[in-house]
Length: 67
Image 1 (cartoon, helix red, strand yellow):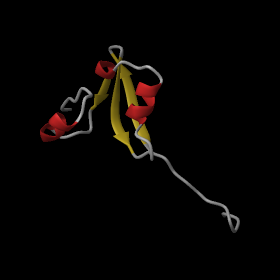
Image 2 (image 1 turned 30 degrees about the vertical axis):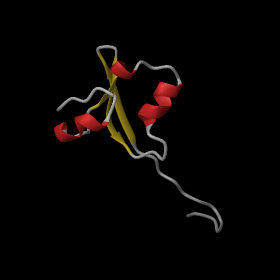
Image 3 (image 1 turned 120 degrees about the vertical axis):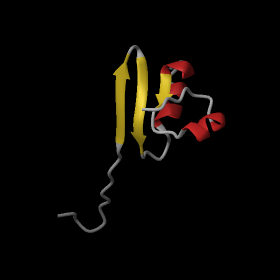
C-alpha cells in the first residue's frame, strides 16, 4: 500500500554485456540509458541498441543490430 503523497515509479531497463559490448534490449527510462553511458565516457561503438528496427538505423549514431 502506498501512503498518500508518495509516488511509486517503475523503471524498466534490460541490458546484456556480451563480447565487451553493452546490448540495450529495452529502455523505458526518462533519460535514455545509452546517453547516460556516453556521458560516462563509454565508446558509442560499444553500445548496441538491440531493440531498434532496421529502418531506424539511420537516425542514431549508435550501433544497431537485429536479434
